[in-house]
Image (cartoon, rainbow, N blue to C red; front, side):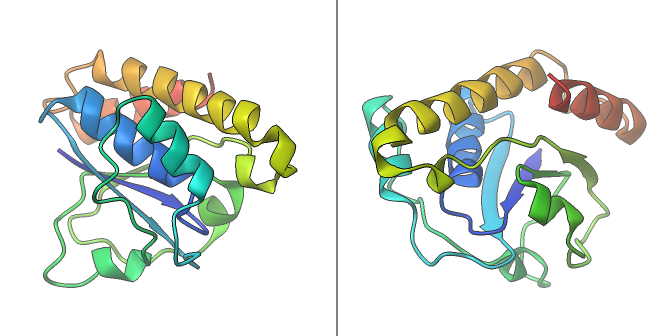
Amino acid sequence: MNILVLCTGNSARSILLESILNDLGQGRVTAYSAGSNPAGAVHPQSLKLLEELDHDTSHARSKSWDEFAGPDAPEMDVVITVCASAAGETCPIWPGAPVRAHWGVEDPAALPEDAWDSGFRAAYDKLRTRAEALLKHPVETLDPGELKAVLDRIGKK
């Protein structure tokens, strides 16, 4: 199952959830992340936290969602937005008509630098809790309606 995580800048929240899903999914899911207006670099606090928590950051990069709308892109089963602005934007047409969900999380990068440690950790913890909840389900075999209901329930927690 392929999951695309979207946020406007693709530097913090979407990067965090991509890493979490890839690690916890253990091959059941493959997560990617992208942004509608990518920052061009992963936020240094995202990298710092992920490295402290033993996540692989070797492939982490800020990229445009256009990479995932082309004919050579992997077909997505799920698209999750993690910021309100990306949720409200007109997204490209994704090959395969993936299930869409919104898992809004406050932007830790918008906090003053002296609050980054706690802000990024809070965002990570919320996203990890949601990823764990998703992966408790047989996501690979749920029909699209069931999957949408599960994703929406989790996004409200």
